[in-house]
Image 1 (cartoon, each protein chain N blue to C red):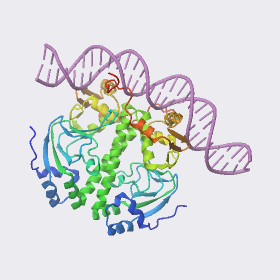
Image 2: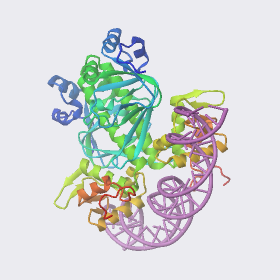
Image 3: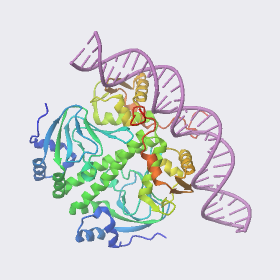
Image 4: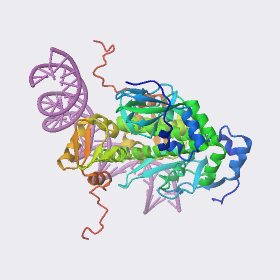
Length: 247
Length: 247
DNA sequence: CGTTATCTTGATGGGTCTCAAGGTCTGTGG
DNA sequence: CCACAGACCTTGAGACCCATCAAGATAACG
């Protein structure tokens, strides 16, 4: 069962990019003001629009970040893994959290109150620079996704999404690379801007080719290379691309 | 004609969010290491993949930020206006600039060498916090756009894009709100994930209703309210929403 | 006044969504 | 162990949105 706040083990911070380059005193400073909390699968950690009281980082588990629109449309923005921060955007902006956070598995999070972390950044500027680097990485990722959603067909988008998931949350097995947390076709659809039906159809096709293997809330990538090829391959019909085709 | 680097007027920094809350000494510090440069329309300021030598801010004019993919697909990520920074992402990441920057109008930019600005942030942490706020705002904007591209139809996406452009670059006239820089149907298509043909058709429809007025590289929004309604309205066909329809 | 870039509009086809039905797996309680 | 309910997944058929192909109109520019 979930228990209340308790004092974290200092070692957990050493794996987190936010504190890279911080000296021992800085670590002590950071850890002294943090608290940790257990999370159970399905739990709502925060919701869109709620005031941002704290900044979160995940120590263990997976958390789904999703955003809903006025028209009821939902999009899954990302899955957070161990060592990553989440709920950080709200810290710098009015209007509360811009998205929902729901636990995809049981886990443990560590959190800081917003003003505490701000003060920490002013005392230790390197933490602010690390935060910039993290946010920058996420912004770039989102920009790539905007381009992808703007220009690529569904099949390629799904391939790209699976490649990213495999990199981020893949567990190597002798059968291939396995996504290490439960994910539904519906969620894959909401990550790629399509429906669960299309995701199912596309993945069935790949399964027939031995590229992936699907199951209930479960994905195994049998041929990662083939998936990458689908994700990046140039479109076969290229009228203006001779290049040794026999001319 | 464009002239070489020259010493900027200190007053230009006062309008920039990056330096909010900085003391006089800090301003002097920042200005001492900057240089400015003229930009002519159509000029390529930097290209995707090029090493990031400097961090840019726009003093006057408009700059288009776009990203191309391996498959040749182009997406316009945003238009930068006076007071905004651009090319900042590359500062925190390997791999050079993640997008192209092309001048949409003549203008003037101010720039800092990357290591200089990093050092400035370490000396003045408030600048790093301001940068976080800016990047956070852009990240949120991109997240909203991902959701929009994932869930909304073309007409609504175009409406949303025009609403944003009107807010960001709108000039009030007695006829309505006018986008204050030249923009083509092609570019609008690359901002919304569609083709110039569809943009043209949709806008022709709106023009017939008196909502917008189009021209060559020119958009005038005659009824901003109607455009917002199109951008936000719930989808008319709602089977499970009786609500006084007469039954 | 020709050249080029931009914009408009029609016709057609295909990629995906929607609607619909059924199948499979998981967990629960008797 | 078995029955049952619920969540998840698969697959088919049809409709529709929108990209694509194609042709021409209009405006800027030298």
